[in-house]
Length: 333
Image (cartoon, rainbow, N blue to C red; front, side, top):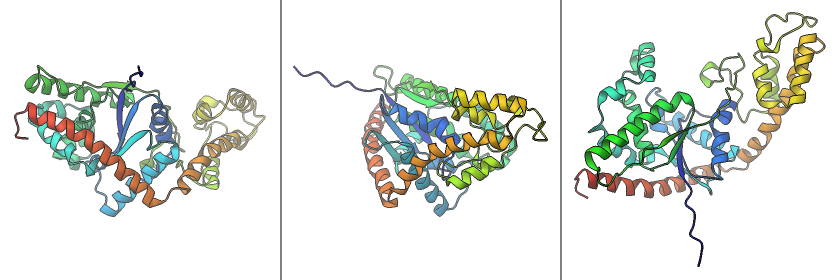
């Protein structure tokens, strides 16, 4: 008798396309995505509709950002043979489920989201129906694929909880006997806070990022000009790594021996700040090298085709769920 196949738990996650990704994206999400491929049925999508809620890029810019981002996914080791990669805007099923869920979701659930209130207070132009409905569209993105888990950082856990509430309410109103939706769990991932070149969280909008595919000389220049301990004015001044914006990068990239040597050298002024940065530069350049090589080997048309194939695979799953939703709501098939 043959052994039945073991079904792996499904996870789903997505990213808004902002162009080429940086080290913060890799250590905050992509590194975890690559690891999940070995243990889960992974669905990863380009959230290009979500990008329109807070930005107004030209069509050409947005399209370029989509393929730059997917190129970085593939360069990081995300394998389309082991996961499903797809494009949100090519999936009208997401928009239909968003509309159907809107019929039974209280608007107060959306208006209470801290991210909505804070960002609209800072920029009243964001007070659009699309931005208000962001968490509900996100719920549709997730619920279509019935994942067991959604890998997120702590700052996104509230959005997963809204998704669970939406699923629970729909099941209670329309499908109590035979629930349509799974209530996904938030898979809180340990994400390293990668500091930018100014010591703040690495962000493209702050222009403080090291791109995943920066050339070696660009990476070296960026790190050499990064500010260090502000109280270490002269080479002979003793420093304190705890005050240095560079030190958190050592926590990510350097081994124990290197960190110990840099710590001692800084506190005793036996090394300069450039000496401290040099092993860090080499470590980041080593990490970037295979990303650039994989990206260089990709044909742009191959990247587009990879996304097309994944979108078709995702559509088959989404359509099945949507048929169940329409049936539960009494809509004509």
